[in-house]
Image (cartoon, rainbow, N blue to C red; front, side):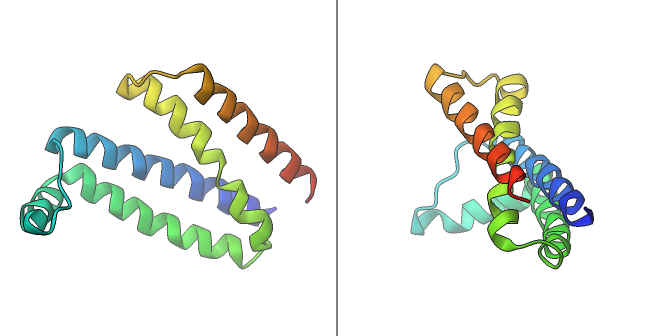
Length: 122
């Protein structure tokens, strides 16, 4: 049971990290990964506190992931991370004003159904 709690914590922390990075990139503007723009890219990334917060949250999430993997099979744990897709869709809609098309909604329903089937296998 503790492994599942670790997975849930990992998912929540990673969703918070991803949301933080998105918020930070919204504030920083469009960033380019062109070779000639790598210097300005890294400056923009490291000057944006929400991007840095996202990196820190990913690091914390990694420790919970390690705890989960020490208790649960990888073939169960890794697909469970797809719950984050559902949460990100909801956060993207609620906080970033992103549109949710019918196709996206159907895809999320399929993912959620897959997680239910996966949970039944434990």
